Length: 163
Ligand SMILES: NC(=O)c1ccc[n+]([C@@H]2O[C@H](COP(=O)([O-])OP(=O)(O)OC[C@H]3O[C@@H](n4cnc5c(N)ncnc54)[C@H](OP(=O)(O)O)[C@@H]3O)[C@@H](O)[C@H]2O)c1
Image (cartoon, rainbow, N blue to C red; front, side, top):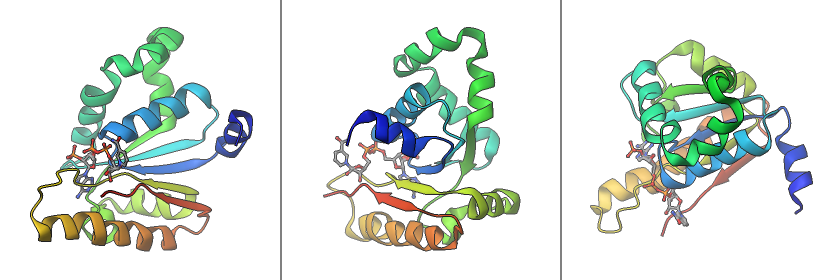
């Protein structure tokens, strides 16, 4: 698939990314914001107690890293405005019902708007306790799928599998 056609697919799309503080998701989010700034919205699910802490984690673990250097150079002082226009932080946990999203307005917005889900939330500790790994990497993925089924405009769910 050529980059041009991928950009067309992402144009004006609303995407939910789980595991947004993880290695793969951070790279994915930065790349979308850089190559397709016309993406409509990115909902980023982050393990946190509330929206403020989710936002803080995204800032310190992604935006403040060198990974975002090119975007910082492009937008200068407007980067935060661009991010607040495109990115919505969602505190949650994929092992919980409805991804552990407690804020009903966020849940309803996502069920209405999300068109693409990219699930990268996982334990990548390959010596994880069996029950913990099963709960997160298997039933967690199922719970993301259940959430996708409630999104009335869903077109694609991509699950990045673990070993
Ligand atoms: N990295 C690679 O080269 C590679 C290659 C092939 C496949 N994969 C697969 O891709 C997936 C992501 O890999 P990665 O390297 O990005 O892993 P990672 O850096 O360990 O990130 C995992 C992410 O999942 C989040 N998470 C863990 N438990 C969660 C829960 N219950 N609810 C919501 N989020 C949760 C973590 O959040 P916290 O920060 O809160 O822990 C973290 O943000 C894995 O399945 C991995 O096996 C990775």
